[in-house]
Image 1 (tube, helix red, strand yellow):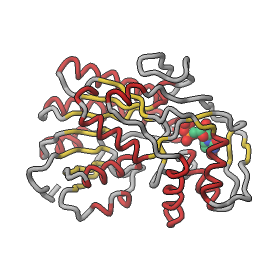
Image 2 (cartoon, protein in one colour; image 1 turned 135 degrees about the vertical axis):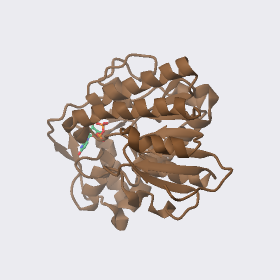
Image 3 (cartoon, helix red, strand yellow; image 1 turned 60 degrees about the vertical axis):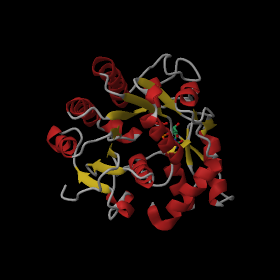
Image 4 (cartoon, helix red, strand yellow; image 1 turned 30 degrees about the horizontal axis):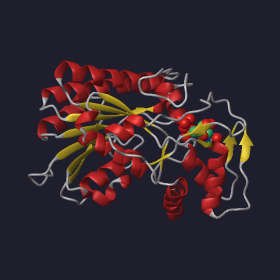
Length: 323
Ligand code: UDP
């Protein structure tokens, strides 16, 4: 941590800052004139995601594990943080199911961030929760104060995180906000088998292969372009009315996976390909889409990047050799 940052700017910590969402957030926060400490253990995050920022005087990269107090406490000690985006986590359906104990370790990270925030000047915390907490939904659209039904260790940890944030807000007046992210997509998302459907489909289609749609493809998700997700995150950090709240971040418009596959084909200009229906052993949630009244009211924001625009930008990224 030898590099010193310029004075008189607001300073934010982004854990998981070299990951897919975290790296876009770092970039946007820097562009808005803030200082950013990007903290990442580079297990799934990649330094290349933030390498364009590396010579920026307002950017500092710290390699470390948010789940280890010895790694993360020095950051709180050295920098007088104005806010923390706690986005470091084990992610991806396949990876989280294969590594339940690693997922459980992320509870330590949540504990560290909360305790250190209370100890060092009470920066506000924005936490990346997940639509996974709804599991197989009891009602649609899914509402923040409605039923949750977490089915996986990942979802249980995210829900625990939300509840702990809320209790620190109540007990210590620590400003917190948990965002339930629906399916985020965009450049830099992992496209391997351990990744997510948009990257996987794009990789298949650009390679001349048919996108493998699991089941009959009638399952639905709500796809949020990463830049919209980042906008919601920044608004959550700024908004006083978001303190102590849990907020869905989605478009409110569900899309079937079959239609997604066709959109990827269309936007890639590979019109002769057709989606391929594939069997999977994976236990999949059938439908998932949010009620977004709180997002509109508290953050005054509606994610509205049209799916084909977001897909085209994402395809361009992968076309540039970034698979
Ligand atoms: N999916 C698919 N083919 C793939 C990967 C995923 O049809 O190669 C489907 C999956 O069954 C799910 C949706 O795409 O219904 C979203 O999957 P992802 O792993 O991206 O996120 P999830 O919403 O399941 O957490």
